[in-house]
Image 1 (spheres, rainbow, N blue to C red):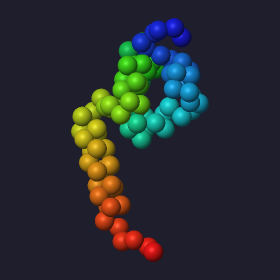
Image 2 (cartoon, one colour):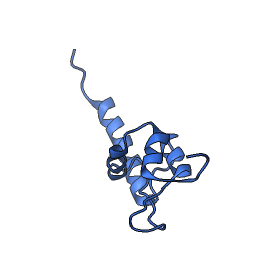
Image 3 (cartoon, rainbow, N blue to C red):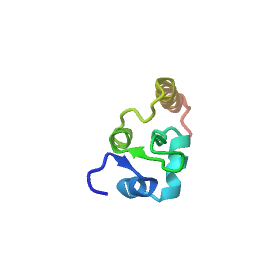
Image 4 (tube, one colour):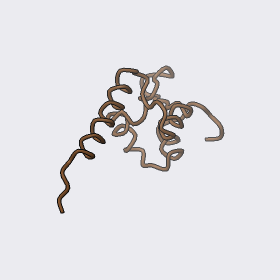
Length: 88
């Protein structure tokens, strides 16, 4: 793997200490950006720099609207939890 910026799915999974089959689930959930297919349709590559940002709490998607939507949703969930009546 070395210091390559563009990682194969297997290398990206190892880099993140995950199973390879977890990557598409994280992409679908908006937690990590989708892979690039510029090397070809059968050669997905994950950008190591954007993976780092995703797990450091930075932007995890290349689509700004999706990022803003995720942030708004997170804020709304936190507000709902703080307003929930206590069950004591």
